[in-house]
Image (cartoon, rainbow, N blue to C red; front, side, top):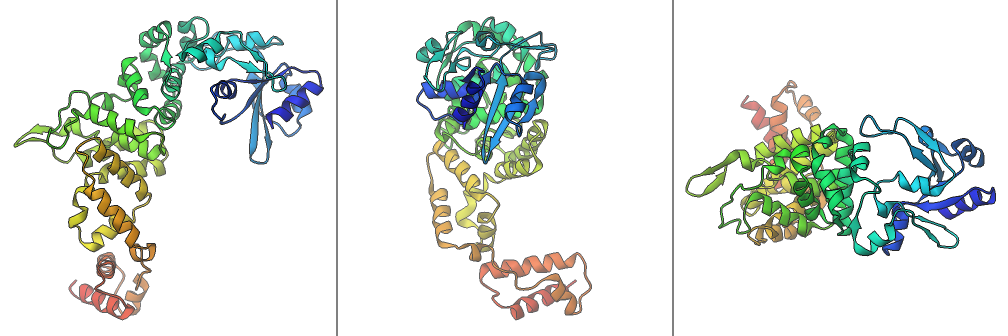
Length: 431
């Protein structure tokens, strides 16, 4: 589709080049996730050529062209004025020279353009050399680039982690000197960049770079607090909480956001619950951790649905210790939680980054293979309406009776509607 868009632009004598991440990834031999096109056609000219295009950033000369499930972002060459808010330029000027457009981008490896027909690479910023050497380098003065858009500091970490590149010294220094500016970035933008750092590969290195560059303490002070928090060596021979989480991220590879955030936050309650008794203990750290994780996720503007799932992972991660001792009904309820595969993956990573013992993990995997969805979540035998028909006034006691019936059903002690009604009547008769 990008080639077709470029062909249409060229046929009307406009310039058109692939630009940014798609060029970078193609040169690295990686499949691009999306394609962007840069052109000297103005937004008005673009909407004339592509009547169904959406103006997603008319001030910045950006339109979105969709065809089925595919979409291409097309941007007019531009140069930019000063930034006063650490995010957007106060003024832009549309240009006809692609070199001026390249100069306003963030990093050299993202400033490359490619002729989609000849394959010729336009490199006005030294991006090819930095791709070859594995270097993240700001275009021009790094201080200016980060003053313009503070989020670029997190983007530098993401690219370095995902591509396993180094950040050149002037760029590193500029980030370290301005790390506190990340506090002014909107929570939503920080959230999105953090998720990408944790899920696109290289999560361990991403977290280490956030710390080394002084960014972590400003966006996740609760995670910075992991450093130096000792753990009982008999269960955690790897070392402190920080080391444990780094090992989990290292073993994780690419992962769903819920797993990655679960890994990052599952022990967030440990610093506050640390105590020395017969051994180092963290009493109630999972419960406190779930509360703290909820606060962090709310601060970063995660949706309630995502936050509830991640906090549940944090709250339940210690329960795997008891799975082999659980009543059958308790185990079935545990296994049928929403997104249980994320809970289980966190547990696997937790084991591998500590004692290495996977007995509970293996037990759960076996049970999941044995128990069908119908067994884990059987159709209810009775409802509150049945209890009303039986002559009982609706009230809070219904919930207790129905839960007791379900427990007996999960245990295999009750199998018919009649047996369920007898049990419920017995319980309600005691009230």
